[in-house]
Image 1 (cartoon, rainbow, N blue to C red):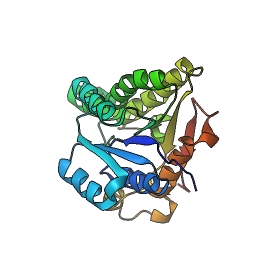
Image 2: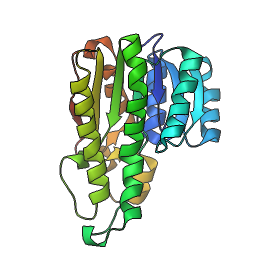
Image 3: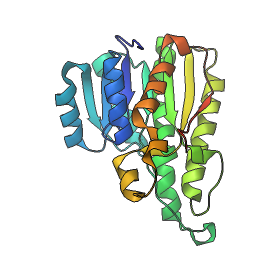
Image 4: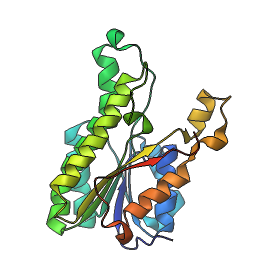
Length: 236
């Protein structure tokens, strides 16, 4: 099992289905957990569940750069460092044909899926440069690889996450900072099951499998992997 003892790991979107799987996986890997979400109440529940393994919980709107800067200021003041960031926070909604899109439709997806990741990455990089190391894992999606009808805002926002990850990896390849993106297929979550009740759930990707891949990317064994876009499609 991956051992991340004494590593401070920030998990954004920690209260969602994938975020909670990451919390469990990284807790088992002995990481020191820093959890972020918009839901202060759910964060409190996770802190109670995992006890001393949760170092800090912070409610934050990641699409607002001022909130993100405050988030990281609080983290550094509390821990002195941050070893890894898992950018799990994001969202999905079906859209309309492109010619019917309005600014709000596009901006909502872009804020949730790209701007949140961009804000987090650009804010944490100076701390990682100062300490001489860091790991960043960004959650993109299979939809980043091929555009789909009525999904333009989602596909474009997730594609932008991949390109951002590649740019960051190139910029920091000599700084012992790795940046990779994960491209899940359909994730087996309660929400997806409710939205697609007739699907074969056994073909979908378990949250735990994605979390395990992210833990590996944070380990010393993955120190030479950066700029990768890792598909985790299940059997779909």
